[in-house]
Amino acid sequence: MYLTIELPSERSGGAVPSHGDSVAEWIGTFLHEPQQLDVLDKLRRSGAVQRHAFVFLPGFTLAPWPVPYLLMSEAVPLPGIAPWAPF
Image (tube, rainbow, N blue to C red; front, side, top):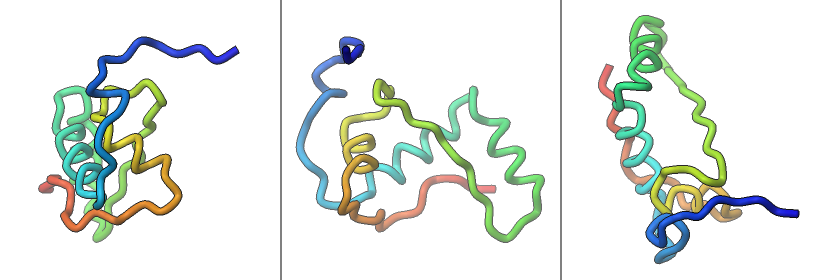
C-alpha cells in the first residue's frame, strides 16, 4: 500500500530543470520564513567560517516541483547561484 496526499498540479509535475538553481532559490526563501529564523540565528552566532543547515524534505513537500525532482534525481546539476542566506 502506498499512501499519498493530493497535491496541486503545480507541485506534482512540471518541466525538467536543466540546472540546480531552483534548489538554491527555494532553500534561501525557506530559511528566511519566520518558522526557520532560529536556524539562521544559530548559524550566525556560531562564528564558523563554513555554516551548514540540514533540511528534511518529505515527498509531500510544499517546495515547488523542480526542488524534489532535482533532489531525487541521480544526475543532479549543481546550482550556479548561492542561496540567499546573509549572515
